[in-house]
Amino acid sequence: MPLTGLTVVALEHAIAAPFCTRQLAELGARVIKVERPGVGDFARGYDERVQGLASHFVWTNRGKQSLTLDLKHPEAAGVLRQLLAQADVLVQNLAPGAAARLGLSFEALHPQHPRLIVCDISGYGDDSERPGPYRDKKAYDLLIQSESGFVSITGSPEEPAKAGCSIADIAAGMYAYSNVLAAVIERGITGLGRRIDVSMLESMVEWMGYPMYYAFDGAPPPPRAGAAHATIYPYGPFPTGDGRSVMLGLQNEREWQAFCQQVLQQPALAGDERFATNARRSAARAELRALIVEAFASLSAEQVVQRLEAAQIANAKVNTMADVWAHPQLQARQRWAEVDTPAGPVPALLPPGARDAQDVALGPVPALGAHTDALLAELGYRPDQIDRLRAEGAV
Image 1: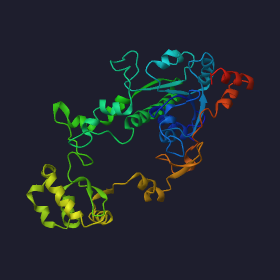
Image 2: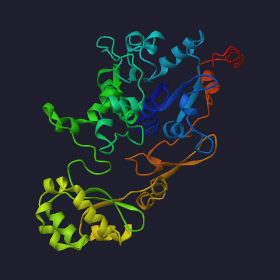
Image 3: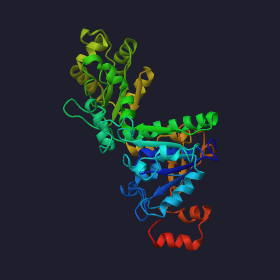
Image 4: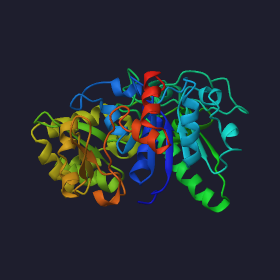
């Protein structure tokens, strides 16, 4: 694996940091996940949808080792100090300032561990030199979706909506992952680790580049258009006669001509001045939508897709989660593998870029504290010392 030999210590919870370190684990890094004794990462308790385990946790924590350690216990500092002496990367998304109070800031660690890469993930940025007024503000995925402006352009004209998955957490996790990889390469050149400060807000605002430039210098932002495109039409979902929906997207005038002739089978519509350009079609959405819905009412989703394919017009089915689990493209490309969990094996999608399961390290989802004794023994603790630490609540 590309990261074999790399050790990552993760003081993490929820989604952003665990999603980052899962990617590192799948490239072969050894990820030691430090969790609170008794309760662990609070994402373990979000739900019980995966054979009694939490869906978020199963998704973001495979391939890691779980060490229970009470960071506030006096004995914890010694254990953590030994772990960091052997680590290459520290990833943390504790509350802003919490890592520094524990003596785990880059500034505190760098003199002792000059090769250590420290990646801090927070809602608004945790830089002591440029803290900003929001540094200590609580930040959850939905709040960052809102603060970044994403919610303001998403939803229907009547009501804004959030994304259906944790996109702010995912964005921050992926920027942390790519920055860690870059820092590992840099360390290979300079011999020194560096600090990485990833903000959920900045990650999401980067993703908002198109709508922000669209609204540049006070211009109106893209209108909320539900699942339809805000500025191109017809581009979005349309109901079919069998109760399903088909997503389609027209990009140019050639496609509009083909759509009228081959899909709607109304060639005269192509010359209708109301719909002669994209701007006119977008302005006359209600009229055009009624015509399309009427034409699709006698067709099944499969029939509409067949016509769109014949006309070489981009399209997709509006799939449910069950449809995605059984998606024929994922099946044909053999994109599903299996990972172990404390509740038994579950399917897992191969990471994008991996050709097959042999290309990645798909380790099990760990039970809380599953590796505590082994890790402590590796650090030199005797069985009686481990028993004492457990009795005292340190692990």
